[in-house]
Image 1 (cartoon, rainbow, N blue to C red):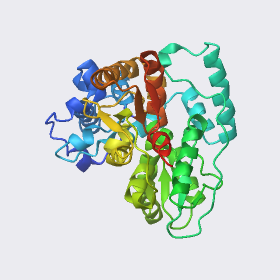
Image 2: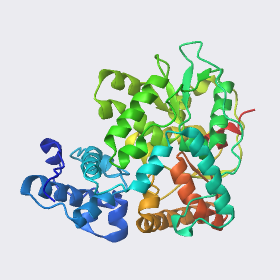
Image 3: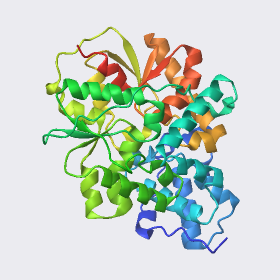
Image 4: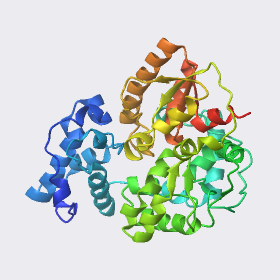
Length: 395
């Protein structure tokens, strides 16, 4: 298959010096030990295709499509290799050639832009779970049959007020977290507006799947749905990472300016915590799991600890933030690898629970929560969003 090139930036492709410091941080390498399933291995394959005319055969497609895109390799890289950009561009070319992202996946991603259809579909899937019609190999947690009322905007009246991005999957699966976020903002006397028409899906999953044009369209819609200069708060780590990278995705000054307004909700609240009333501290111990796109992409995982450390005792995992295997839709398209990666994360959680006695884990991303919840329920460990727990400490 030589009618397709990956169209990678040669300077970016040349930044990797194959030092191997990325290897311990790559989830697919850790579970397989296969060099081709590591960042430097995949980069070498990209070089073979771009510089030496290697054929894009089924093995090459497999090596690229099995990357979780957690980007845990980036903070570990002393050379600053932009691995995220390289794998995204590679997957874009493979998807355009029809080598990855099958039709059923594209259809599923298309639904994310139609919020009412998504809500109905999510409810039907939740009912199917109760009837035991959903295969256990997908390992997703218990979806809500009822999600409760949607958050209602209070409006933006001052420069300190904000937009609250509610998203698509987040609103379908964890709408209660939006209500918890709103209660914290209310306690801070912060007004909030909700995205207008077209602001329901950030396009992150489309971008990960190599559907670049669709991701751009979603980004343009989201930008148009939250005009002005007010900060934009996001309580889904994956969505927040996507919005913060709109400047790179679209390559425009407007997109750069929009991205600069985006904050993870913990990041923004922690910077304005003096606006909160006195909080009620409990004796509860909480295990903290960092979503990859909060820790490795946004680099905003410490504010979670800043906030929760005020109301409870935190328990850290000993795996240095390695991916849990959720990876957006990765657990659906690569269930075997996703399950193996999750098993390593579960082992780390088991160790944390054994030494602390904690029975609660927090994760700031719906994909991670649902991926872990199905297995942790059996262990007697509850999974919640950090903001849900923090909001309960309000007087």
